[in-house]
Image (cartoon, rainbow, N blue to C red):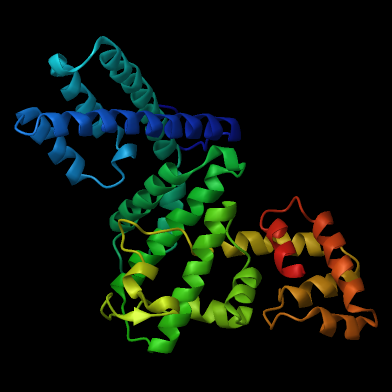
Length: 337
């Protein structure tokens, strides 16, 4: 393995990500063969052993070590395999092994990021080793979920997963009572954050989250500082009477819906705003609540600048296009309408 203090280059991220996703496809082929074997050999000790491996692991298609064990068990029982079937398993096992190497590389090369994010909670009476372990779990899920075809950097995506996983763990260690109406709002915010990160691979700007949740940016910020409530996860909350447990995933299925590193995105936005004229900057700040206030309507902005609602819309579109190279900015267009 290479030096784990050096992050992967963008090209390396894409290459390893592609190998991992390809290995996951190969894993599914092996799993399909395993299920067929189990169905046809119900009393076989090998079938029982394979079944135990499959039951014990979630997201098993990404557990390449266990997939390797299943593949080897299938190959050891040659009588049920055709020559073509045996060849297929061998070829897919090689792909899985290659994917496992890439997976290990991505985890090792991003351990520095895990330690850095874990250290931000060092004064919260939670052992640093626990924080590092939890952060690594978040990194692992990021490796599994990363889609190299989406075009965003893995390190940005992983940062969201790691930080959110650690934050949730720390919250669980300091649980306090939270009113139900606030729980509903927190659940809504986290759901929207999840949708945005899964869609773009970027930490969403809080202005977008606030707009979709019909809240002010300040309200969203305050709610995100509230610790998780020590209530039953079966309690019905939010839209559609969802279980709280569905909206606040457990540590196994925890998702990166939080705006994991909002400060980083905000800094990029602030730098970009400095390049705009005063009137353009005022439009963007008001429309997307970068000042922490309530999102202004097109009509409100038009009145303050003495122009029509349509003129404001066109101005926003022009400004967004100008800033489109900045992470998180390209998503503003959908609420600029």
